[in-house]
Length: 496
Ligand SMILES: [Zn+2]
Image (tube, rainbow, N blue to C red):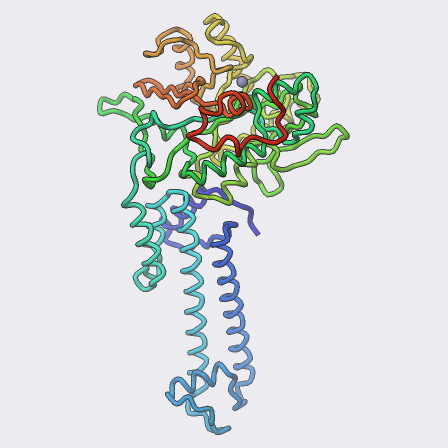
């Protein structure tokens, strides 16, 4: 059957089917247990209707016979109001034609019921992804009339009831309470990363293990955290005067939900990380889903959940209400060793053209699944210290070699979290003016607490590191997010 699809796609499909007023049945099935039940019900119903057709066919074949099967007999009894079973052979009081019509009618009802259940399943998934209006509209536009089905009415009442409780930013009062958390490549194999070689201590400081990432996501999910897009935290609007400006977004969440933004830096799979327990590049797997490849020293290549993207996809598949309207994280790329694990910086590479094509394709699929991209500069230098001319050259190179493959982006994530200007006011220097002229309007540094500026011209949001250093040296800084002691990987050595 079909592979897993994003809530965004389901919403789009729902909208287009509403527009076209035709029934476009979903073949996508969420893996949630709740939905499994519905699927099983659907299977039972469809096998019942197949049985019904079989019965009708057989009945027609036996047209000359006086023997009635059980279903036919039930109908006869019902219509006579007798409940007796002593029909004399050879003297049916109802024409068989009438009986067949009854069977057909019953099967139509079963079909209708199946359609209703499928519609509710689809609407439930929309509502879990915080698309309440779309869920309501889907039910309201049911061609058979939602008023004729108690289940549809109940589902709609449920969505309406939740919708009435929604608050801008959920549990928060304003956008400056929203945490933006970030990671580097996740450690997929602890024994290789923490093997005591010269890179081990660096990994221990700046990387997070997959085990820890899963613990964090689970605890944050349990505490009501919901992943949102930075574009919904601060959004660009056009004013009455025809100019544009940024204002706080209108993330509408139930009052116990806490929005957060997620990003990952240096999604380049640098050479120094080879065979150290990390994924080696981003791929699209056989089901069309974003995934990662891990190349082992013996030449084996594994495809699976070896970094943040596929690990989070799996988590959201199991917890669709962890993502607000299809949001995913931001992937920040440098350029000096290509992008996403492909060495597209090397024009002499044998696979140069092919790698560029692959990066384009993988980036396209990632965006379809809700992932966003950011520039992390080309050469990963300290942008406060480097000259304006250097920044211009470096950024141009990133646009040429990386931006040309992944498509336009308006997010800039500073290397080392060091900003272009120390101001706590408004950016005004030439470095900012140049970045802004290229379309960058979201700027991200690093700070221990949530912090945001939504200025007319841009959004500036700092990010909180959730790496080994934060876990081991500053656990108290993370206590609002999760229980750090339960998160720390038992394989993690002491910091040196
Ligand atoms: Zn970096």
